[in-house]
Image (cartoon, rainbow, N blue to C red; front, side, top):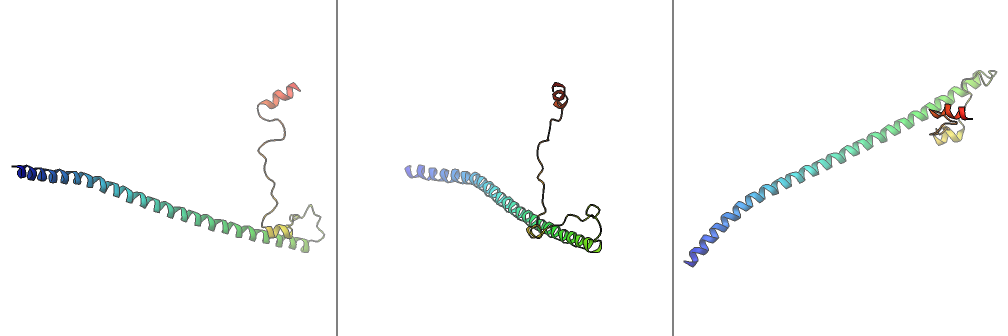
Length: 133
């Protein structure tokens, strides 16, 4: 009788184990599926970032080429203006400003940095301050 109880316990244990494994496998499959989706999303994001970086790098190169070509065109027009119209006063010459060689090599024209404030009082309090003074 003891071995019968042992055999019954073994069969019940196998059944309980099989049921537990079927529920565990569903969760494991869901977890693996979610992990796969996560890895896939990360790969797509990395590809998108690389594509975006390449796009902006190419755009920056094109803008740099365009600026260099514009600078060369301006220098050509300024030289032609000076050569073809030597007697034209400076204020009437539309190409009075010429890039120096250092500026042309630096690939940057002189830039005035904008300020984030105005010179004097402005806005709503401008009238009140003038009235007090």
